Every structure is written in structure tokens, then in C-alpha cells.
Length: 367
Image 1: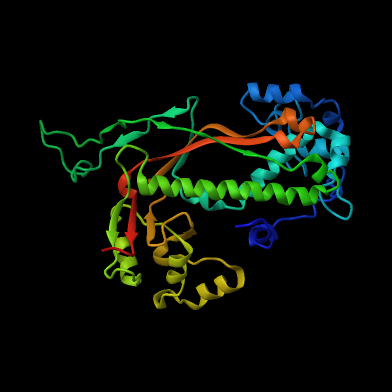
Image 2 (image 1 turned 45 degrees about the vertical axis):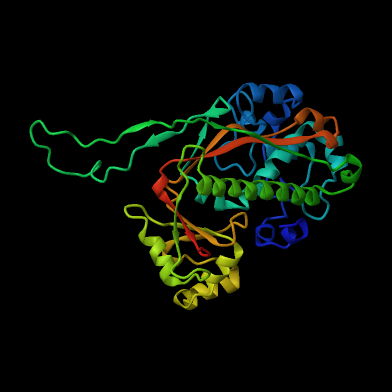
């Protein structure tokens, strides 16, 4: 999705631009916020404690947010500096720097995360997120091959107790660092409003999340290096995707549940127009709000990284785990110094299979 298309997407149109005056909702106590000095050393302290600046500000020794407060600790710092993110006269990027340059890196990070939240589909594809200290991670292996391994049955005297064998996989996976340089120069941004700048940052987050969905799909199709690629079945007729084929895919999941379907736009359109799924209310929701219905109880997720002839079914509760060694970060020191050309946004993340049988691929075009 290019930037202009993104501007008119439902994800952006649903956002609230009118965050204008953070104090317009009533009086906010800024006395404790005023006692704090936010600078490069504050970011260094947050890094040393494995926290973002926003998280650090919420700790007891800084400015924790009281229950029911209209602004969080970082927003109180923006209010104290007089930074307005929307409304009739939003602060420009240059004014932001003049008022509170040290807040800019965290502002960028928070807005990128808002953009990432505009693609909530990723959270629907992963079973769990694991944070590790090393860039090498060994997933665990669950032996599910023996049909009676977990059967609930009476145990006679001296008989073997059913057991679940859990070991480590043979091969560790590498957790690479992904970086994105923010190439917009300060000159290009200085007279832009923060409201305009926010949309650019949302797009960056949205695109990062879209790319990660592609990484999840690649892990399902090709495995994580431990001979655990998803199994493949074929449609009844090559080149044709119909209701019976989806039922066949659904039937492969016992005892799991096919709660998610991932497919490229071509197969997505085919599914949306199948007669069996032309429920009037489903059609109304799609036509009025763009909400995809749930065929066979499965959430539909579009991913154009998939080959045009494939549909992926999965039980998202058991199929894939996300592994993070470095959360999303922004080079705060360079941004504070107003050198956008060199600022880098980065994250170290990878995906690993949990239970192989929790994902099955339907091949539409086959020999």
C-alpha cells in the first residue's frame, strides 16, 4: 500500500486528529512533571532498565499517572512544553524542537506504534510473543505424531502413563535486526505540523507491521529451519477454489480449530463472492464498513506476500510464536540533534513454529 492510498484507508480515517489542546478536557496537575528534566541521559537510563521513555516516566520515582487521569506521563510533558498535536493550530515540527527537542524521539516512537496498531491482524496470527536476550533462539518441539500419546484412558497397574514429549528443536533460529532509515531531512519537515508528521509516522508503523505479517506467512509456508513447514492439500479441481475446498481445509484441523484464513487478494475476492457466504448481514457489514465476515468461523487476513494460488488455514492459538530480542527503537541522540537523515528505526524479531499441525496450506493451482 502506497502512502496516498494509506491516507484514505479506514485505518487512518478512524484516527482522532483532534488531540488539539491536551488540557482542554479540564485542569491537569503538571507540578511533578515540571520537576523532571528530560534529556539524552533520561533515554540512557530508560535503555539501561529495558524501558521506553514513556514507561520510565510512569515509574514511582518519576511521574506515575493517577487512575482516571486524562493524560499519561509523556502527554503531561507535551502539555508542559505547550506542544499541540492537532486542532486549529497544531505545533509545527520546528516549534516542537524549539519547545522540547528531547521529547521528539519518544513522540516518533509512540506514533509509529500507533501505526502498527492499525494492522491488528498480526496479533491474530501469533500464539505468543517471547522476549529473549540472545539473537539465537531454539524453539521447543512437541511430539504430536503418536495418535494415542495424549489419549485419556484408564491406567492399569504397571501400565505406561500417557505422556507429552517436549524437547528442543534441532536447529536454533536467528533473530535478525530490521532497520528503516528516516530519510526526510529536517528542512523538509520543519514547517510541517505535527498533525501531518504523525500520519507519516503512522504509515511507517503500518508498513512495518504489514512486513511482519509477511514474515509470519513465510514461517508457516517454509518452516523455521526445523523441517516443520505446514502440510499442503490440493483443491478438488486445479485452478478452482470453491466452498467444498474450504470445508476440506477446515476438516484437516481436528482436534485443532481453523480460526484464521490468510490469503492474497485474488483468493480473498473468490471467498467473498462464494454463494455459500452471501449472508445479507455479512454483505451489509462488508459494504458499509469494510469488515470481512468469518467463513466457517475463521477470520480473514489479507496478505499479498503469499503466492496467488495458496490459502493458509491456521489455528492461531498454536501455530506460530513471535521472538523479540530488541523491541522497536529509535535513534534518540541523532533525532534530538535534528539530524533526521541519519535516524534509524529498528527492531529485532523472528517467528518460529509451535505445533506444525496447527497450520495447513490449500493449493489452488496444482498439477
